[in-house]
Length: 419
Image (tube, rainbow, N blue to C red; front, top):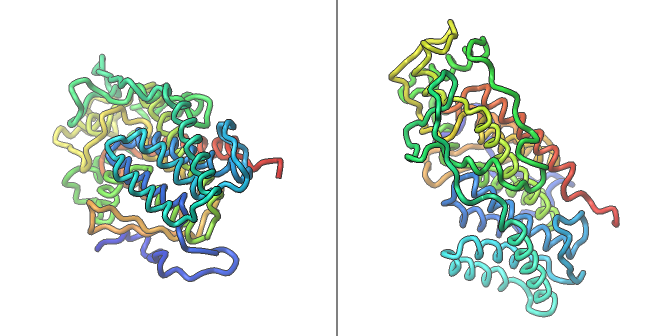
């Protein structure tokens, strides 16, 4: 089993982590965390952008149901009424189940079974029944609110120019061309619109900054690069298989369980986290199709014709990882990571968080971290050493994401002034 070299000092798992007085109070996952895990598993077959939308809808419905009872924070929709003694656990189960059953009707049987298993741990009675009604109402309200949010129909882009710097289709693209053009118009969950945090233009092709990123990737990002350490190949493979939602929800829930945060706190955390991730992914798609900047493999093939004296073409270059079929600038994985990191650092602090990430498709890779920053840095390396993003694209995506995460946290689900 391989572990990322730079992170060996953080090689702890939650099961061996000693309790620190006053910080960790419980290690048992609650209904919010249980159904967050069910959400991640149920939505796993979606593309990363659609999965982020699903996660935001689900977790905001859960938050709205729980908060309607607790009244600790400002509501998201503000249309759900609830008795103060309704079961928050039942509300959580019903809200998540209601959203997921509607979005994934083919999974109805497994979702119904999970619902019954969760409810079996609650005492039957008025409180549970009231909670179920609140959760169902929150799910229905969120689904109505997102029913015309621009997530369909799909749109595609075929390049109309072969000029240097212009995005071209890459291996793996469908005949229709670049995918997810419509995602730039997705109705945001918390920000004003997807252009609000548009990245500044990429560096000029003739610039030294461009040349430095170009040559870094040409050396370390190729399929057969001898300059890529094994641990960087591991993270490239891992984060190609692991999109934002499973990565950052796993990080958040592991820390939440270790801390022993309340069900209400967890509902808010996961709602903020997933709203920020989804808004970051819509925003980065707006930036991508605004600039339509070529992918590194296209750039390296045309390196002799880009007007930069410090770059050299290589027609044989192929990246380690297959590039997604849309423009390169900026990085979507980085934008989601920046948003998630900003939210989680604000809620939990920057250090001493012990997170262990695995993926069933990569049993030989286990990544262990003690800060959210380290996860984001590995994601940056993954895309560069994987050969699909220049470093300046990672930097642009991360900046955008952190600005979005900050905005979402400061303007959404604030602590209620009625307390």
